[in-house]
Length: 121
Length: 402
Image (cartoon, rainbow over all chains, first blue to last red):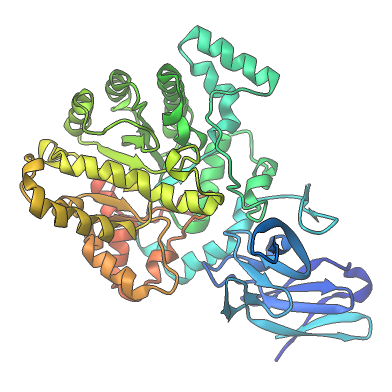
């Protein structure tokens, strides 16, 4: 297992993503507060750079108790990684492909040592 | 540029480059040895609206040209039909909002540079280039606007792109609502460099079997060129009035308009009238074909007297024609896809199509990675079939700079 340097903690702005590479492997590392999430930058659909697009929160419908439709909203508790090629969406917290959770992005462990952030690959 | 997202702050993007966006496609091309064989993309697109200021200079009607120039100044009311719907998936597909920020050199033409960039990255040697907003022009209430604008666009494309790049070709837009203008288009542009045939957008309300089109079909056939039908969608069609999601209109529309037209084409016996005219059906995927082949054969066996021009079953005509593969429906259905390939004689009739840069584009790996095809079948579909159909130079060396 190799340890890939990502960034100094102080330089890694909250809400951002860093792409790191070693050989053919590319990993997208996201900082969300004190949490870090790292996934292979490879969409399960056609191999696009899954971590190089935008992130969007889950869109959900608001229904009344009688099941009639009211509106839609973003669920700010569930952020999605969106592949820029075709829009495939993955759950930030576990890398699961949102419309088919049996499939998921390859996940990597992130560690902080001293003032630096690393991915274990 | 800040891309709006669900967060308070959007995503800041400093630059955009097609080569960078498609770096994973280039990796696929190397891993799969695309350098060893020809890849032809029979359906790709440009955003001709971004060149509208130049294209309108080619309008021959001075009144329409003045009107178009005036609309440029006022910032509204262009000649295009604008459909509702979010092709860019609300910005999730980032090349839509970012493409205007891509830098290109002064020469060659920006369209050539942009097209070559994605062709090289994906390993595509030749690409058929089509417009985008003009795919809706069959709905324009003024047939003279469709006729004039398509003629101007074809002239612009031939002079600025096709004449200057060997790898970019096209099946030129036919203003199908005006049969005489179609015929003149074939006469005037059929021999231009890079023209492999002509294309009819199927979102319109004209029967392909109308007598008015026969001389156009004959003119295309006589020149040894191809005729393509390119699907689309129309949220304004009453069939889709109940649909409240773009996904529904898109999924149904792109198949429906080709289904209606292929039924009319086959059942009126046009393959018998023009047996040497290659016909291609674009951008409907493949899943509709087993459906319509079975439906037509079943009814034909009971009602053959309604189709006096036919000498064999409808499905046999359908499998004589050609199909662009995109968007290939390939989610957990390999077994069904394999059957579909057999049904349509994919080995000889299927043509790789990317639809790049649209949101549902397919890379060559969509074909190359299918487990039920052997290497020769893959190469036929990715390029060999199109090379024969369009009489392209035989593969000697890779043109795409992978």
